[in-house]
Amino acid sequence: MTFMGLQRWWQVTLVFACLFSSSFVEGLQSYYDHKSLDSFLRMQANKEIKNPRTGVIYNVSLPSNLTGMEVSVVRFRSFSLWLRGRNYSFFNLPPRLLSRPSKKRIAILYENLGNCSSHYYNVPNHTMVAPVLGVMAYSSSESAFLDEKINITIRGDPIKIWFPHVDERGRNGTPICAKFGDNGVVKFRNMTEPYACEVYKQGHYTIVIPSYPSLNKFHHGKRFTTWWVLGFAIGFLGLVILALILLALVKEVKKRKIRKMEKNSDGGELFDTFWIGETKLPLASSLRTQPILEN
Image 1 (spheres, rainbow, N blue to C red):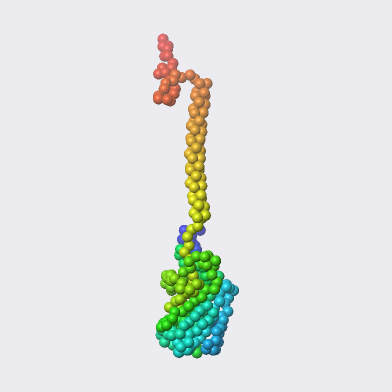
Image 2: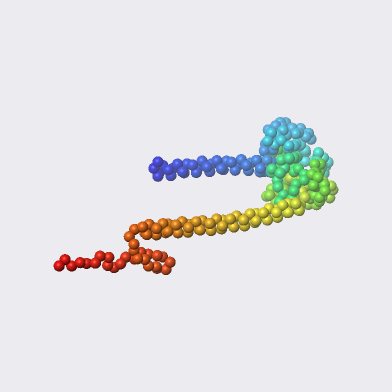
């Protein structure tokens, strides 16, 4: 293969590698991105529910990869929601709720992420002890059950979200309400009632407790560090000893070679010797054969 052919093959390989990695990363982000999840739930509700009736709660069926989630949606008239509010399952929507911008009909999407909560949300330095529950408001029209996302303004009591499934760690610790913002920022709020969060905005909420490393984990990590340092010291000492042994073997081989050369030289013609430092060298006489006159 020529140099130009090899260069072209390398460029094509890089292009395919980049395409594969980008598609793989995009797939991971679409699965774990909560914004993509909200968009999917909205499209699934519009696809499945046709000609919805006002005030009727509809459950949204989900694919097998989202098993464990529970999603439902209901449509209200804005005036009716302002007067009476609405209670459903784990959510208590009080009266005097307004939509911004103002819409004639409002659709409320209730989400219970269940055992998939940790796939989409995480609270640094805290442990989630309850599933993530979400309440989202959308404008509703004849063409689309869930049209566009809108905001809710609360002029009276706050929205209450009840968490019936709480981990034992949350029951024994000091649980805190956590709100997940669209920008990834998590805000905390103390609970006024056991396992209930009072909120003033739509969004996703859960209960968390501060996570501290246990004493056993600390000792385990300390023992691991001690053994690691001890192993490193033993390994380093072994390498030093091995290097000294190899150096001694090299010197011994050189001495044997020198002794063998000296022995071979002793078997030949004898020469005088002299020393230069620690080295013994042969010395030939300046005059080996005496001249004889013919006449």
